Image (cartoon, rainbow over the protein chains, first blue to last red):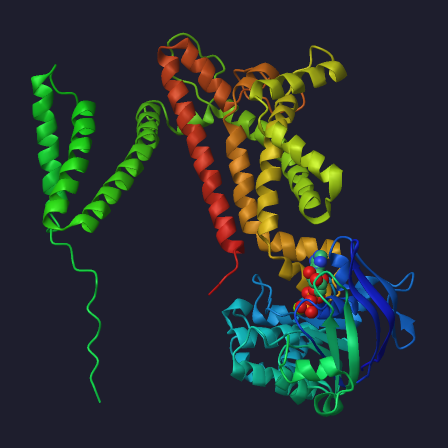
Length: 259
Length: 349
Ligand SMILES: Nc1ncnc2c1ncn2[C@@H]1O[C@H](COP(=O)(O)OP(=O)(O)O)[C@@H](O)[C@H]1O
Ligand SMILES: [Mg+2]
């Protein structure tokens, strides 16, 4: 239950502004791909094109191709809603639905889509997803409390449980730990290592150690200057990237000499 | 190891005793009374007005002398804010006082359940049942038209609207908010005149007139509520593969429902007391008219207006009618509060 994505010469525009240019990238199945780079170089922008979330922003569009197991994500007749069911997303700030309980938040993908589900199936799904997100033991006695009653780290894991409850192929995470304390961060990193057995994971992070710890492959984005488009400078196995990168700018960035 | 002493708190307690403001107030009022005796003799309003000014001065000066400058400023600010609050409360309380006082003369179960058929001259019987029904009809029709229209317009503006069309609608809504109610009445009157001819009178015409007044209020308040829903929730929903329309219905509207209910109730309260357009479009009747699509119908505001104009025993009915109207508005408010309490997000940190 995971798929590989081939990105080919992808450009992302916000209206007239070219934000990301000429991305060629292979995202391997059942692995963690980390995207690093200075702020504003288009990591979030690129990540959001992988499940067509960029279309939510008025005037944003892409050119190029992103092919998931033979199917072009932007192809004619491809429904963005269908793409998002296969490519889930976790955001920078935890965003559980404030009107829903913990259990209902996990079931949101089912309930919001008006799909019928029996009581026992629902209970199973809640337990399975929360266990998958390492949250079950902490919340199993208070499933009916509102999701917003949890701590920030728990809320983020709740959001991960909500994302994996719809059983996507790919999970995109945009700086999922940047709003969390070190202990919650560790919990999420452990979770990511477990999730990669079942999912293809792409994670954006500003934390080098995190990229080194959790990812199998790392891509470095950079930008020549404000107003210029972001580029993928290089991409390789994480160990190679962190020991012997082929580009000077990658080495500078990773060793903290700029950015 | 040195033991650090806790820092000395900057704030010291007020030096003036708790009863000091009360004493100063008493002195101020007595002084004001005395000053008035020097003039044309005291009036209640005069005593309170001059007393208030004296209090503000005396309190500040006393505090300046005893407590110091910063406390004096605090006392002055507290005094001014309290006075502003009391002044704002005066019209509200006196209005309620008068309406309840005068309204209770005739207000009774009988008043709520009888109409004006066969009542004339100085008879004290009769009631507003027909007018209550009429108000429910007319406001109900207005709500049936204005609430969905307003909510859908707001959804369009917030979730779909881009470019000139949405800007145009926003301007139109703003302009409509300022339409005088009599103009709305004339509009509805002429509209039905053109379609059904001059003889046609019905509750539905009044409903349309009120809907014209109500729609912009609904649009505005719902729009505001929808804009308050964080974009993150919409994105969270899209990312789960939920289509846009379901996201709007089940996330956006659901999150904003408490505020929307309040806004809608305010819009209803805004039009339920409208008199001019109803005078023009539905007129008045003495008995209950159960047919919203045929014939004149009495409404509470017009009932109050007519009864008050007749004077004598009828004026008491006008006050009772006014009280009924206020009670209905309060009831609506109560319902709105219950609904929004029921729907509002629970357990927010
Ligand atoms: N909604 C938007 N509309 C217009 N420009 C945007 C929008 N979001 C991001 N951008 C621009 O795209 C560029 C890349 O931003 P982003 O993808 O957020 O960078 P990163 O996530 O790497 O920090 C920036 O120049 C930013 O100003
Ligand atoms: Mg970003």
